[in-house]
Length: 211
Image (cartoon, rainbow, N blue to C red; front, side):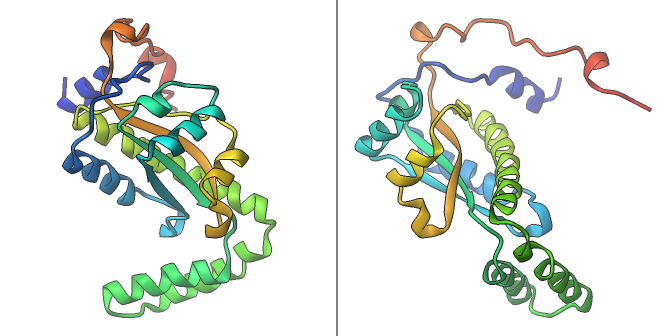
């Protein structure tokens, strides 16, 4: 079995974290860089990641996250927040960044820019947000794998009230809306009911379909 598969078997949605254990800065940086390097539709990267370490802010978020203890016990709480809309300015910002970094303009790339500008900004904002939110889930997948490679425990969470998290973090001012929470830390084995249970997934022949 490859090391990657061993690590994915090792990871699980940690239910209890050590409140006094801190994820080292170098490990955090690797996880964040893995998210930054993730694929996204048209390369737009339509979300951002907030790193929360302030205990007071984590406590406020826990109160609107079904009182899940990992939110406050974790070392770092990552909040994935997607663009609230695709705007002309945001699309141009990313295309201009590509041109700047690559040092040239490509005719096909510029034609693709115009195609997106004629499509996304005309759609309802909520439809665009839902599309952007799906890109954040791709980043989440990268984070889970990178964290496992660093032997850092994680708990991906949708169980929270996004509108309240948005207010706590003033996300509207940034044109963002919260999508996911990801506590990072280290499992507390004597308080986690899930830690020693067998990982259960459907058999490959029931999961992978070939035609």
